[in-house]
Length: 329
Image (spheres, rainbow, N blue to C red):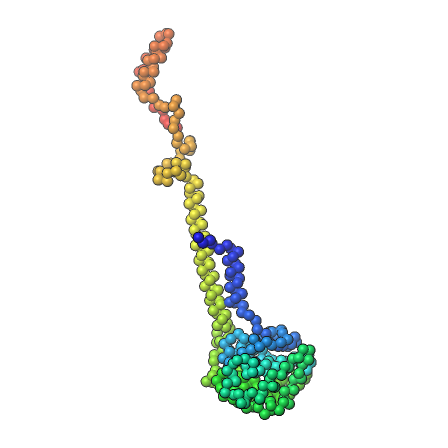
C-alpha cells in the first residue's frame, strides 16, 4: 500500500531539485579583494587543481572551463594592486602556470603525449610553488630559469601543433610575453599578449554554448527540464488527489442527507418530504381506521348498553350515518 506524499515532503523535494539542477557547484580561482574580477573568478585566495580543465573544448562546454575563461579574460585587463604579489597580473599568470603544471605534469593526462622531449625540461619551472605559506615567489622569477628560456617556445609550438592542447600552448606563450615586457602592476600596466588567450585553429573551434544559447549551459538546461518535468508530475498528481478527495466528499455529503431507510436500502425510492411530518411510521393501534362494518357493530353494542331512548336514537343515527375516512397525517 502506498501513501501520498505530504505537502511538506513535496516542498522539500522540489527545493532539493532546484538546488541540484538550477544551482550547480561554484568554482573559484585566485583573485584579490580589490579586483573587478571577483564576480568572474570568485573571492578566494587559492586556485584548486580541481577547478582547472585541460582540453580546449572544455573552456566552452563545461562550467569549470567557462569559469577559468571568464576569469582570465577579466584579469588580462585588470589593474587592481595591493602589493607586488597581490595584484591582477600575479593572479593572471599564476592561474595559467598552475594549469600548465596540472595538465602536463600532475595529472595522468594525454596533454603531454607527443611533446615529452620539448616540455619535460620545463617540469622544474612549473612545479615550483609560487605560494609558500605566507611567502610568495616574486612574479618574474621564472623568467630567469635557463630551462624556461630554452624550452618554453618549443613546448608551446608542440602543444599548438596537437589537437586539444592549443590553449595550453597559449598559456605558455602568455608567460613568455610577460617576461619580455615585465609590466609593473603598481603603475596599472598589463601583460601585452601576442594572440587572444583562447584562440584555437578554425578546425578545432567549437561553439560557445553559453553564447549561442540563452546564456544557459547544457547542464543548466537539463536541470531545468528535469525540474519542470518533475514539477509537472507533482502538479498532475496533486490535482488528481484533489479531485478524488472532492468526489469522496460529495458522496459523504449526499449520504448525510439521505433518510434512514434510504441509507439502509440505497435502492429504495425517494419520497417527497411532507413538511407537516417527519419520516413515515406505523400508526398506533388505537389510531387504526376501522371499516364501516366494524363501526356499525360497535354502534349497536352501545345502543344496547344505554338505558334510555336517547342512547338508542344515537345508535340508530350512528348506524345510518356513513363513516368518514380519516386522512393520514
